[in-house]
Length: 337
Image (cartoon, rainbow, N blue to C red; front, side, top):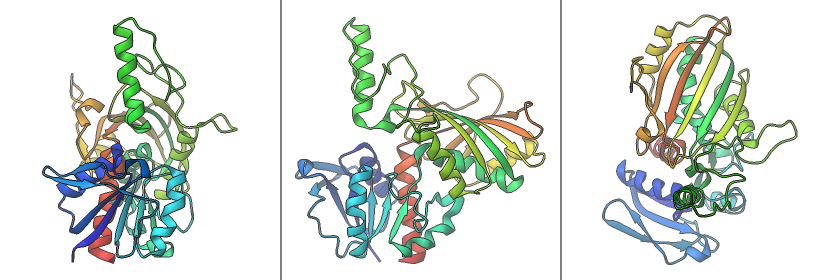
């Protein structure tokens, strides 16, 4: 059976990746529709190497007959349209933050908790986790299965693409301005991003954490285990695509480096590159355009009784967003619809 798929936010970076990923993975779609805001209506977007779709306006689109919606607008837009699409019979796989912590909405990374997809029937909505959470929980799950995790301390190095196309443009424009000895202008970020790092992603909360840091904690609990404590520091860095994470894990009992390395090597969605030599690790620049989560620098953390540290990188637009959504759609198509 071929499915009718709508991609909401088709003119954005993640929407573009969703369309490309659907084509690359030969998703069984008879029809793919590109949707965006009224101002983008009539624009053309590429779908694969040789197909072009004309963008239709989201506000007045009739979702009747649509099987799956891959959604990547802002949270406010998702809150407004997703229930309408779900009521029309479509299953919405939403990349925004709006539905993630709703008890009756599954929060899914297929390699980690794919069985949770079955809960979509409650509201016809499935949430895609935060990009930084996705790559971390993929690396944590095989370790948690080998030895229960008590606590995770993570520092992220998140690329500007996580804040959208305008943020990437700001990095480019600021870099050029510095080389040309022109004034550096800020718009998307609170401080200069070129040749700098900014420990501030999303809004600040009352306890001093940012919402991005809160997301990593609560989403990890929902996806893997509510007993895992997470302390995160999320930092924006002058990189266009790809997030890096320094992850320190404390276990209930001992897990050796070798055992951890072997568990990660056989886990789905992970590539281990860890040879303790120059260039024997993966950086964000190298993972851009790639599907796996890469794990490097696996080593003992001597500051706790049972601890390991590792370096985790992934393309935040692909596995951190578009690919994860398409993988959920693939499970839906093969098992549930």
